[in-house]
Image 1 (cartoon, one colour):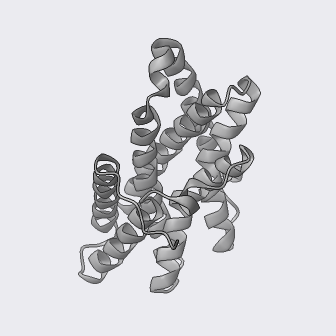
Image 2 (cartoon, rainbow, N blue to C red):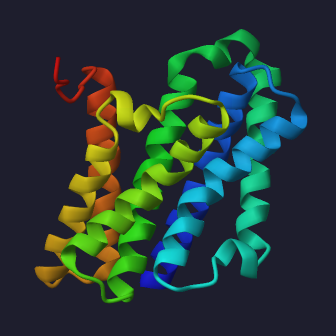
Length: 204
């Protein structure tokens, strides 16, 4: 069942982050090539980095599935833009799919890390990196300081989810249930953070 959970979360994350990256590109008035590149890098960037850190050939380079789902997400974002036009610039068009992608990819990162038999801190780092890596890459490509480093309660959601995943596994729930719990926790915390505008304190 863990393989099914991983596959499901991976598909959800790829499509959601491809939509997120593509919408960012549309907001910046990039052309179709730029939209495609940003959507793909947002979708695949975190997973590729994670796989390299655990000495695996990235799955995005071994199969056509990851790229196919990423391209579908780009296509979906373009369709959403055509249908909703100016409404797509509403912040929730970006934040909701981004929250879905963060939850899904935090879970895939935690599962890969656990199967790679890394430490507790390794699980937290790889899960968080998988969740936020694509967004960081897209912000850098757009010439911006990554949002995750400036403000917003974002990476913290992934960290909490990874800790919950580890505790769930230690409690004997198994990787599949731990993964599902992780994704739900990350998504719910992120939605609450958006609703109440949670931010980490700054040093002034």
